[in-house]
Image (cartoon, helix red, strand yellow):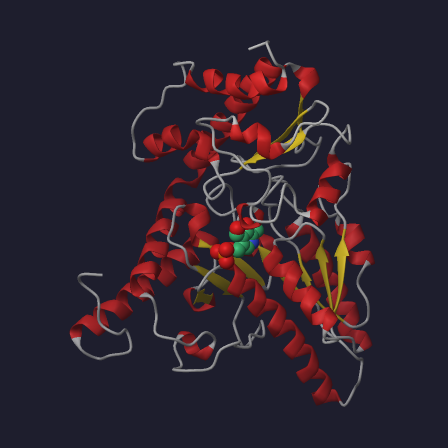
Length: 403
Ligand SMILES: Cc1ncc(COP(=O)(O)O)c(C=O)c1O
């Protein structure tokens, strides 16, 4: 903001400096993901990146039809039933307008994942996009995206031979970046959504597209000054982009250490919850045999008749958690669609309350102090007993007189 305030499209020194910073940030993001700098398009955030992929897939479907004189009707998109609203809502809107069809594949009650076979079973002749998040923002369950891409690549070969449209593959990696390995070469996707504030970057994002406009089609939603090679025009937000690049550098260098640390914190929280409430009163909603989950997310239910997530959390003085994704906090105790999903995942239904402790947005907030201290290089101690004391606030509400 002080040294490169010029318009990056200007040819004077501050403009050039700004352009250079943006180029460095693009390289940092590409390095973090194992992609190429030209595959990175900066956006306002994950919502825009997700919408852009859906918009692109529909446009591409129609343009290809025009080319062949074929008419296969409306484009069809397959996704899971637990995607973020920035996938679900645009698809529902397109469906209402008759511009696209969507299938929302439910997650398996055995794994918490959208299973590859179920996703493929939903594919139709007019399918043009499959979008599956890399990790769920409420359960933390990691989805089988690499396997899905592999299977779709093979399917696409058969579809091409039959004259059917190619299926593009997108993953929303918002929750996974900074908490585990994310490599676009291993994932084999055409598009990947990046959200800065999920890995301690500023509140912007980016879209990875594998060869934008060539290998992977990409259609802008906005038209203007030609920035971002016209895929996303508008004068670049240099400080935010530079910050995103810096966050990406930190992730590239440290992700294994971050992951190990967050996993320690999560496991400690879960151990203390179990010790405080007892095995009978606590249920961890994301513990599935054979499924991997995010190192930073703990989703649990405190079992007991008539408990309400909001009331329980109101008694939490220091531990900051939420009853669902932060984006839905205005919408009541649980978002309806996900509530249904979560009930599928719960061993016991109709009892207890689900509480999510993700980080950093909704957040390991409860553990934010320790996390940030460690993040800044200070040794963390969990030996103070501070966390158990705070859990006692909640336990008093759930098991009156026992704390
Ligand atoms: C999985 C996932 N995708 C997309 C988004 C949207 O990101 P933004 O709000 O930055 O547009 C979020 C934000 O919480 C998210 O969790």
